[in-house]
Amino acid sequence: MLRGFATVSFYAADLGAAREWYTKLLGIEPYFAVPNVDNPAYLEWRFGDFQCELGIIDAKYAHHTVANGPAGAIIHWHVDDLEGTLDRLLALGATLIEGITERGDTGFRTASVADPFGNVIGIMNNPHYLEVLAEMKA
Image 1: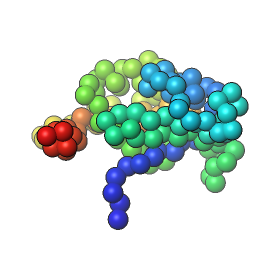
Image 2: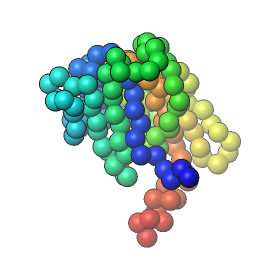
Image 3: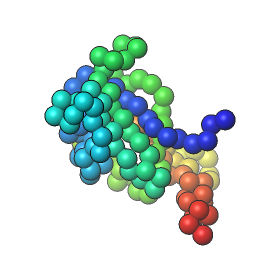
Image 4: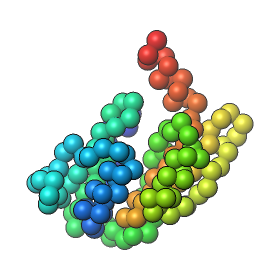
């Protein structure tokens, strides 16, 4: 059974540029690099409430064609400030795919962008995420 998000893996043809972009976005350096941080084939960051993993893999290892256009599944990350996060992503060079969209009247709102390497990033206000987090801290 699926138990929860563990790692998201994206591809990029230019890992140096991807490292710089995601380091700016996340505000931290990758904690893991193979074979090394100066010449990586894979980079990984851990961040957020549950120390989720984001891995960036050199596109030459992809089993599909990797282009700089949007592709792949959308994983939505809960954010506290949807407007501010969307503005920051766009300021860092992401391309808007879907603007802020209300998902009913229950407080769920989403938006999505493509990073400069063609990976889709979803962001959302998710009341359920906050409820689960509060229960875990209680």
